[in-house]
Length: 196
Image 1 (cartoon, rainbow, N blue to C red):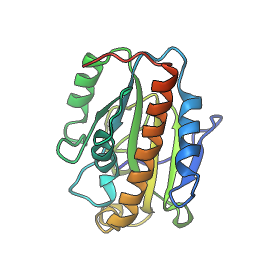
Image 2: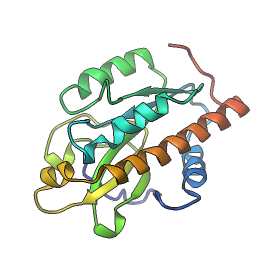
Image 3: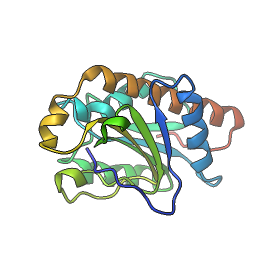
Image 4: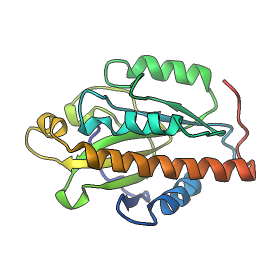
């Protein structure tokens, strides 16, 4: 789980999972942030299946791997999560296998009550572990953070008691958006894909 802070001077997009146009709008937002020179795209889904609120990343990674994506390489699933304990090791492996990749990081976060259910698309790297004061490496060229519950008091407990339904719905919508992006890139053949 990361601590979401506004990036001053940079544009971020907010999309609520109940919006019927979520997937199309998120796909468009992602496409606008992709550089034309990207050779491959890696999606790094951060979180753990041991905490309901922090399972957004691994759920998204699992759902995304069930799709027939041609342009996306996905890391971080329910069976092989990327979390605070193994993040540095996993990122070293990803950077070794995909040295030229454009990385999209995904994580859960806590926020204001009126932001719950929103997915925030931001340029720049994700700062995982910041909310728990853990010194972890930044991840990604752009990132998606899903506001799964309210921030404030006893955040670790809040994450543990987050409803799985909202996390699952958000993971499905993020997955659909990324799959639509993959289909668009495949159709346009805009990003060459290197087989692992």
